Image 1 (spheres, rainbow, N blue to C red):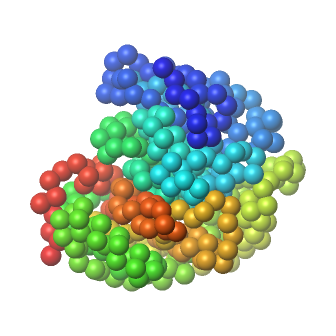
Image 2: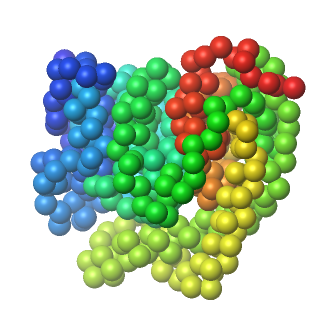
Image 3: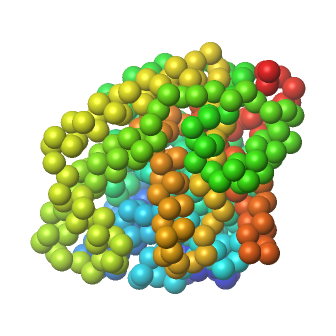
Length: 409
């Protein structure tokens, strides 16, 4: 029986778009697909009605969708995305905002907003999302669910509307680590043709994680009280307090480099269409593309140098099976449609946090962490686990295995 969409998670009706195979490791499960990912016979609107109106239905599904269906999972609809996936806010002026059942009145986060809402509300077992600058990690944290941003290039991005190809990843949101693990294992089989520029293609798989450390600079982004609450949750979940280690990166420099590279690539992907078709864009999206159109080659060159330094720093920090523990957002979900100076600062801080793993191209798994008090109510704030390239499944397994095996000294 199909679920009823009570949280504004889906684009159009909830219906079977592709029936899963009767036999397979995912038989009997359901998943939803973020509306930047092709499903055969359906228009991929990418969160913009003008774009949807000019696109024909996809002739075939993205390989990641076909692979999951062949493994037994059934597609039951496409989910709302922030416009062209160019936002972390969880709002799209063209659609009703998805509801965050874990923190009523607060945003789901974006741009995988509908996918997160559908999973948190129990409408599907898992949902496909994309993560360029945090679009799986942030919604997972805000909605109190599990999320996985893969090693860059480890999962096929064919049939996916690009935003910034050198950052774009196709990942998952799930209510349990067991479901996350099962779907991730199948999805990773699609990445064999990763491009030569992807991290997955150029870096060998690292050793199984055996040591947890706190990424010092990333926790320093949080307010002191919030950092203490999250560190207490880390200690409770992992049986002790990990050592604090400095990565040696400048988060402001990371943010500038990420925005520069993302903007240049976003304009390369969509600038011609925006200039010629003149679509109706939400004000925030229009502002981002306007800024993207002004990025210079000199700025891109400098940003690439920063990316190389950050990638090297993260590779050093995750050598020998070390996993970095970090916040997946700069706080709990903000109230919906607010634009105070405090909220603007939290959004910028969140993007600073997200930019490090994005620049490095490494995998991140988000698990539920703390429930923090905000204005008399509790709201989720997750725990992010950052590993070396190729340790995707091992990171997911941290939520499933005996924690006594980790060195927390």
